[in-house]
Length: 448
Image 1 (spheres, rainbow, N blue to C red):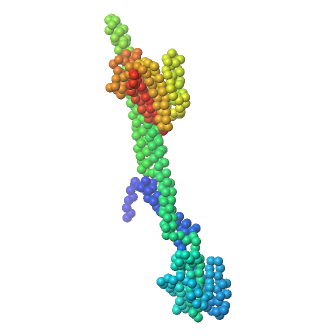
Image 2: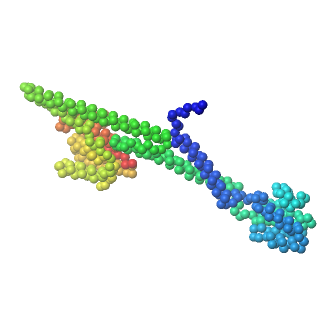
Image 3: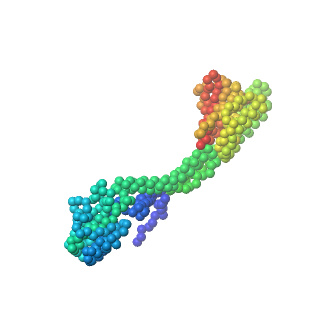
């Protein structure tokens, strides 16, 4: 009876399997390169005598020379020679001028040669290039075989010039290991890094644009699971923001009816002073409700990010104020392309510039940028803000005691909305008092 299979199959494209596959491919690539090098370049080092092909050829020629008369042997040896193979018949062993070594006996291949020659008692000596003196230029492979009449035949082939020593072999092997591993690792890393880069880019885009589309679910299993979790979180945040906005907007909208009834009832108050106070309170509450509705129903938050000229936007704002009779200075670049939501950025900057005009003097806008960030500074020479309020003024509906009048101080949502817009673009909005009096509002936005 076969065991029941689990309904949940283990995913195949996991990061762990990719690492194992990368290691295996790197090893196979190394073996393939090693084999290719061996095929193209020949033996790794100077091959042993048994691998030179000298044995079989020497045995055949020796049998022929041994079977003819001594006077014919030099001619036969010369006829068997070529550029890569030399054969000589010698009457005495001393004529060979061979190097002196401890054991010239060809123990490795003598049994094979004697079998091919049919002479079990034949003397056979062998020499390799390493046996010759270092100052001798013609180091070679050599085999000398004794014939039946005690004369000798010597066979030799030159040392292969492309043969590699141990250090060269090891160096090439290490280079092959590093090269194959690097190539395979780069390919595998790219396969793993591309989904992570898309994941990071999608997360950054969502931080700037809440209407950004979900991240494509591509990559190994673990990365896909992380992307799915992020997309689910993104959808939940969108739903939460929409529900909160609709709820608060509905509350603000519903407050209009009782405010209208309060104004109507105020018409019947006979005391003019009390009636005036009531109307001021109603007007202030109405302004707060209208500002809240505008804040919660901010269409700029539904705007998609696009490329626009931030410097031109600032120039336009300053020129419009000058046309309206308000002198505002501008310092900075004449052109600066930025990717963001132009309507939202414009509203935030208008609010900051209006504050500099209302509460300060000599308003000036400065635009500065480097390779990574753009800074917009709105400066004035007004009274500034007490240090303990520099951060608190960004709280919704918070107003400093001296700006509670609706005609000057607003309802306390302007700076909150401006900072929210800047934060949605991945930037910061800070306030600080200037030396010599005045306030500086600094908007810092990333260019990446």
